[in-house]
Length: 317
Image (cartoon, rainbow, N blue to C red; front, side):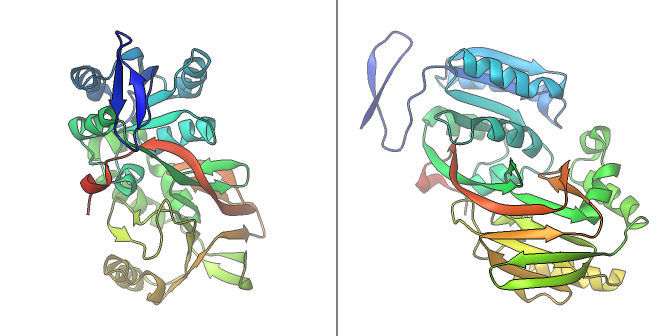
């Protein structure tokens, strides 16, 4: 059993699997879909649940997130409670990967794939309860060249759609904002050739979107990926072949029916690492943000991030 000190320096017993924290900081991206309204609620809820915050930041400029995290770590923070979407969590994960710092998740974004894969319900009270209980574990991160990401990396159609997906669109329409951006991007969709190198060999595919998934739940939980989890050490590679709109619709329906590796029009397999090369550089999307470009070396960084999660008996089914 571990022990921790309360604000009055009284020793208390922490449950098995819990990590004691002495310096907690709350940082909320107010530009995330629910960030502005969620800051005060999260601060009050955490306090009521016994989490003592040394500092609390309500960031109206998301570009200050990295600097605020750096400042907090220099001041001794060992628990960073981050309110935002997957992009915010990825930014922080890149800084605290392979350190002793712990990430607390407040899912205030639009899709919240990372929280879903951790079994955290996307409500402030439930997310705060997970953080207050202090149960932590080590999960995998993924790597794209020299950068970490959480769940997805892709090239092609996703990058085109991302260019249409503004913060205002996500805030006003939520998950439907992705659909609106996707419809706009269909007009610009262009097939491309991608050379895929993996343990099974090298193949060149014609694709409209290709990438990897490092979690069991994808696209806001609409699709489940068999044999993949954030603690399993594997990636799911996929490439969508050029096809008609009706064929794309059938492909999506098959994905929802959990036929990921047996879907016509989709080349998919499990791997530990894979390299994607294109004749000309293509922009790559990491967890919803355009962040790098091909060639891409994609792999798993095992047990790279410590994060607050529900106790095993409380995990979402």
